[in-house]
Length: 222
Image (cartoon, rainbow, N blue to C red):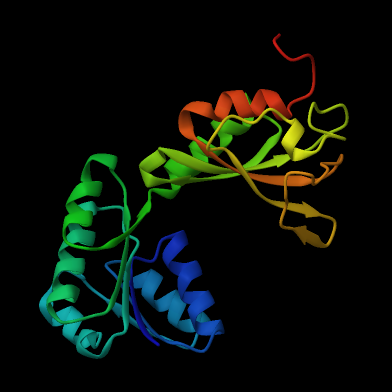
């Protein structure tokens, strides 16, 4: 693939490294001349210093031939302007970071694949870990209306030693997979949950706390 990456912060640099390692043709654009110089010295890619909202810079980057344009700058205005120009030129795969939640709908309306501000994602992850230490990871769906949780089954967990059908899960809550050692189990109602399992649960946002208590350590109801 021919990939143009706009913005050479930590995310942009790591994307460039991964894409080059996977043998893609990569062009990076950043207003910081030193960043462009440094990354060109490290990886087999083309770096262009300049303002990516400029049509001439995008043409120099070969936007007409690009398969994908990815924006990672801290400015939603810059990201939006680049995305709109890339779309006008027929680029098929358009992805951007959205820094401010109130701007998400703007990007969605023009059909751009969006990623949340990574700082906000990390903060939310840390907060959830603080409140619910048995939840190792989560993925938000449908704008946060539902989540897929990875729950670690610890010693004396309420769920350890029970079959899924005996957990008392609310309706519309699904255990979709269990990771046990090097094995992945697609569970059924009679599948037993054991200490050390990583259990993946699909749950509506309003039921997360209830599910956390069902799988936690301690006395139910306290």
